Image (cartoon, rainbow over the protein chains, first blue to last red):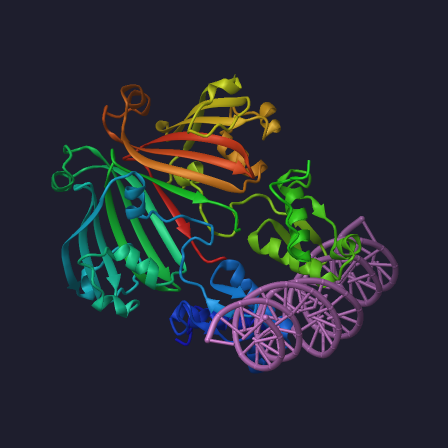
Length: 242
Length: 242
DNA sequence: CGATCAATAATGTATAGATGAAATGTCGTG
DNA sequence: CACGACATTTCATCTATACATTATTGATCG
């Protein structure tokens, strides 16, 4: 019951320092842009040498969690998702890159009690969520239906966020750092209702993307997106760490 | 002659060491499984302290390019898609995970002159390639058609590889380290010919995956895969570096 | 001949101090 | 008052050294 967060593994000193700093950032105690203690301060706090602190911080900088600058100090990096690893599908950028006008229209926005969310065999309890169903448009024609749950236990600030003009996706990546994400991608036939909303023939091919994002063991959000197959494709790029 | 590989920017000493070792691995000079010099040897070669060498090697180990063991030394890691960052779709594992029997049948295997490959607006010259068209089966029913180019300038050993019983995908990930990959994923309607091979109705939804892989600036391989939409979905998971 | 165990060689971790580079602050001059 | 030169602070890196850890190696012993 004490497994505070998975497990604190103080294997080595610099690993412990790294883990603690990381925990504070992921917990939100140190927010993006915040300056964190100087190496000298941490050195004093942990009673170790600067090299040890340096190793921990260099490691965090390598993964992109923090950003270090000479003299300017070390700050928590804003949660860009890349780390050079992945370009998450940014619908708006994608649409505008094709020269089309992006549009967003929320259809539904309601609170869902915990019981409403049941998926997978996992007994994981997912708390109360805010559920947003929305349509994304390119030049006024709908290209994507999105059903999204944002779990308020993990992201309490989402309760008061305004999703009438801004879709929840960009808001989340801008405000909430995550540690893990899973995408499930499939090709499906459009169901009649879906087809009507997307203005395509029934049975037309659609791209289904189910995305789930975690911070540590907590599920942050689950999204189910249905794209018009003829209007959209995903690209994911994996590159060097640089 | 000076831009040996992109650019050697010896910003710092350990970065330079890291870059040089990395270059030798990616160039194929040091192959997976090879033991590379000990820290003491590198220390002598670069005329620096062991800590500096250690920093470079630790960094490489963190990204998964090399594997380090006490006493046993450091070896070039076999190119798993490392770092737990991405689970590349392994068709065979996926099929067998569902309890089905995996099958592979090559349909075509020929050399293609350089001129045959033309894609994108890029003027990049892609050399001679080996082209393999194949079908992957689950319990003897076809689920995937794959068209693959392997570029022999970048992967000369592929010229003599045996792709009659083993698909080129697994062979490549086992033998060739890559630095960059791009996936383009779309939902399409099956064309009549494709539908016939996949034993589905014409117009049925299919998942199209176009994958392109680089090592540095060189294109290694381009694959176009058409999955039966009802039989398959992709999952990609991005997780912590641990 | 084979199992056991100690020597050894490699990496992993840590400390302390020196040096370098860059942004900030201060002071002096036009 | 404005602007440039210098000093200061602070972080980044490198060196040198020491000890810890661990798997291989090889010698010893049953």
